[in-house]
Amino acid sequence: MRSIALIDVNNFYVSCERVFNPALEGRPVIVLSNNDGCAVARSNEAKALGIQMGTPWFQLRDLARQHGILAYSSNYPLYADMSNRVMTILSRFSPLQEIYSIDECFLELTGMPLPHAAIGQAIQKQIRQWTGLPVCAGIAATKTLAKLANHIAKKHPRFNGVCDLNALNPAEQEEWFTRIPAGEIWGIGRKLAPRLAAIGIHTVQDLRQTNPAMLLRVLA
Picture 1 (cartoon, rainbow, N blue to C red):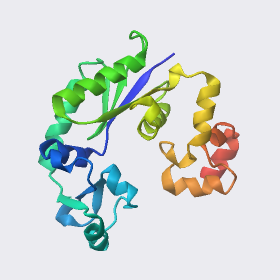
Picture 2: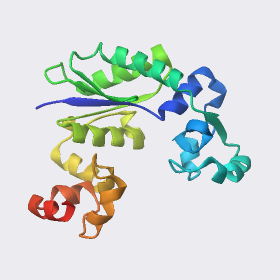
Picture 3: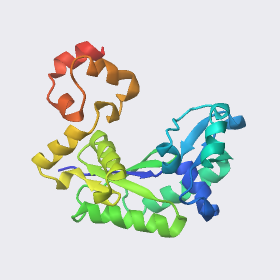
Picture 4: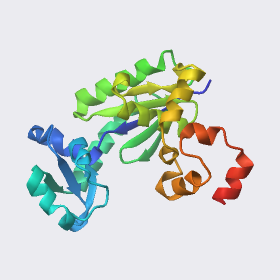
């Protein structure tokens, strides 16, 4: 079976700021876009307060005063440098690397010694030690499933940041797919999720069980 890992730095811009200012750990932090226009990164603590991606800063000032939210101007040279460090480390783990974004990278693990979750844990440990950044790893047979596995790794503490869908039996996979909203699937998102919900597709498992021809008619 093919095995692809998606490595993703958690809350990347915020995590970069925390590397150089450890006092930010555990506090609600957001990073703002150019000219401090809107929130482009949020710590988990800020997300828990209901702050959405893209919310204008002027709408958040009262909430920030109330909850002690710390806002930082974006520092793109810093983020680019930290990204380069992460991607260089990841290149040591697989000769087949596809950098997907500033904080995401696919690695081909097919043919490497099992368990592949152990490779994910080694990646997690080395990036933390060498850069100070926290990462999660999702491993599966396709890139789309690897993205879902990464989502599971981030949201569910039992995986400690590394989820290998290939290592789960079909019943376990189905259990997780039943829990995940269809909008979390790569390429669907908020735009298409309402159209799927209108025809009764609410979860990943719903989508897996739907006739592809009907999906083409709905999503065309």
